Length: 87
Image (tube, rainbow, N blue to C red; front, side, top):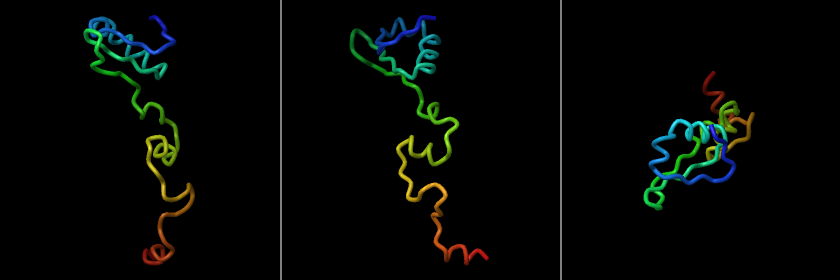
């Protein structure tokens, strides 16, 4: 399998012939591949954001996916009165 170091643009015919190799390359390097038909970009293959966040703590995963937390890790999002109501 060839390893590419720069951004990769390929024809749809080449993608069809080497699909599995290209998917593995994107998975390994994280670099996207643009697929073209007659010189016009028709699709882009890129690694799923979930592949990048495996092993992160839940709040780090939310931040990596663009979520915004209202509380810091370890800080409660419940009010003190809510705890009293649960007793």
